[in-house]
Amino acid sequence: MENHVKNWLGAYMDGELSGSRLETIERHLAGCPECREELEELQMLSILLHSVPAVEVQQSPARFAVQVKYQLPRTPARSPWARFWGFSWRAAPFILVGMWAFSQVVLIFSGLVTLGTSAIGQDFPVYDFLPGLMPLPYSFLDELGTILLDAGIFEGFGNFVFGSGFIQMIAANMLITTAAAVLLWSWLASWLAYSRSKLNHSVHEELTRA
Amino acid sequence: MNNPASADLDIEKELIGAARQGDRNAFGELVKIYYQGTINVVYRMCGDQSLAQEAAQEAFIRAWQQIDRYQPRFAFRSWVYRIALNAAIDQLRKDRPVEDIEKISLKDGRENPEAVVEKDEKVERVRGAVLNLPEAARAVLILREYEELSYTDIAAALNIPVGTVMSRLNYARSLLKKKLADDLEN
Image (cartoon, rainbow over all chains, first blue to last red; front, side, top):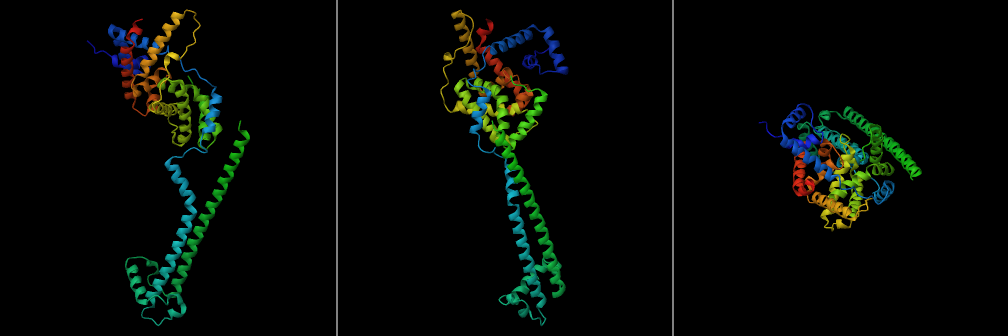
């Protein structure tokens, strides 16, 4: 005798079955009074459940919607990703300025270091040219410059002679500053455009508020 | 039962998009569309009209707060119902007394008072039997029997597999059959 299909009768009654499964159940029901009786009980149960009326609504949907709207916080909460991107976008100009400042420090420092290393063994009037170097001991700069050069940092400035190295530094500085300025201006333009569209949207919302 | 036609689904999509941008009027329109279904769901979970009203309001406020997390691949109704069911369960767990269901009056055109009383008692038994189901099984039964959601939509609403929907429904129905055996025979 074929196994009973009682576990599938609820899904059958709910119209959730299809294809071969549906055919199997219908074939079984045609030849199994027990399962047919079970199906009838489920159908009776469904009718009984529907005898319980729905809630008597005290107010209209429109009135309820107004009540809800007045209780809503100003803006919907944002997902963690949305909050992250929102914060990153607002922090972008500060990050840009910070990175630009850092690049300036690096360029100046690398210039000083390589000046210090290239001054060793030369009668080079570093004191006169860069008075700011006066407090810095040559031996320290030489030591640091050698370490950094050996580590591959500031390779581009590795053996430069004062004149061409200085121009390289200026060129790098100009490139970095130009890039930072372009990015900053782009951010500013997009922020202005966004603020304007948000303002227009708020005005529209106020004018059409019921 | 609220079931927007496909043309209305485009409107609904626009409303959801606007609500996500902070448009409270658009969200208000969504509230109007889903108010009846939501309050039915919470009422059948709570069994108390005032609790249901509070839970429905709380559900929509939460929906507003979480609308950024709504994924369009699921039906909006399923998503709202999930929030509503959680709000209903939270209301129940606040240890509020359930309104005495004997006090709920039912409109009935018949004049025979005995028949009305009998019907009221039967409805009370059925409502009580549903309210006594475990929360997980009750939620599935309500969404299927009263809101006529498909198993797929129920699974999305409750974030469970379709197989679990089926087994919980079977369980709920078998419990109800035992509890309401006399009413079924009659």
